[in-house]
Length: 293
Ligand SMILES: Nc1ncnc2c1ncn2[C@@H]1O[C@H](COP(=O)(O)OP(=O)(O)OP(=O)(O)O)[C@@H](O)[C@H]1O
Ligand SMILES: [Mg+2]
Image (tube, rainbow, N blue to C red; front, side):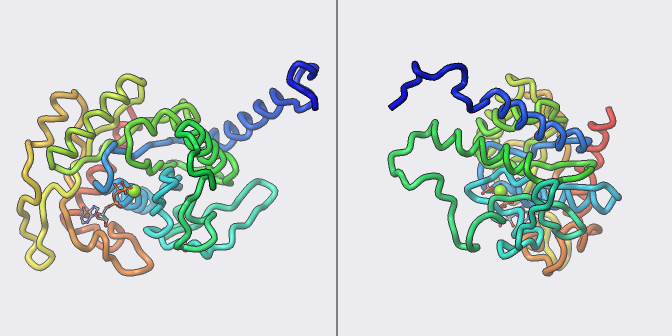
């Protein structure tokens, strides 16, 4: 058997050439996308995916070409939110894989679309003792492939729906160094504020521009009379933005219709005149202002 010492050069694998080629493929995809924005929190379950989907809906409504990369490989939800089932037959053309086309023509790519059935979980390896480093390497490779192999075409915005965990930005930042910035999302609870603070600190350390903080489920809006009341106890989220010196860019109330809007549309497109709909539009105004700056 040959050992590494017996190999000459790269042993004929042209490994450097392969890496360069992969890098060029990713670059040529990303060059066609004007603004890449990550939506994140550190904390799970605060509404990252729902807000990503509705911000995309509002941007599409304003005439922008929008795509969403579902970077949550283990709990993908963008396909479900945009009406693209896992039964979609992915088409591979000369220029890569055709993304899913969700409501309002929003292009999406998600791990969900690659799994056998809607109930299939992501299994990185059959090995029960696979190390965290190995799993993280596989995750990183998967995201690179979802980005580089998808034929996104020309886009104004690519929104990246991040999984929970403040360390997940490392991978995205290394794949997309020109990331326009991150939108941080929290609910008013002190636990969520505590965790989003870590994510903000991490982004500051890495030099990822923070577009601003969105407060989701800030209040409860009664669907019958549209009266607002507080949903969670917790210190004023605006104080957190002052302490961390970042813009407060949105206050979105809890509205049961966010998770129930009729099939074939997203909450924003159906209820843009509701309090939550207007709050989403205001958040998008602030994102646009940041991008224009
Ligand atoms: N403003 C809102 N009003 C009502 N329900 C909401 C609102 N925002 C999110 N939700 C609901 O809260 C739940 C969690 O939302 P979502 O899945 O978007 O969170 P997430 O942060 O992406 O979660 P994960 O960390 O698992 O990815 C969903 O059932 C969603 O419909
Ligand atoms: Mg999510």
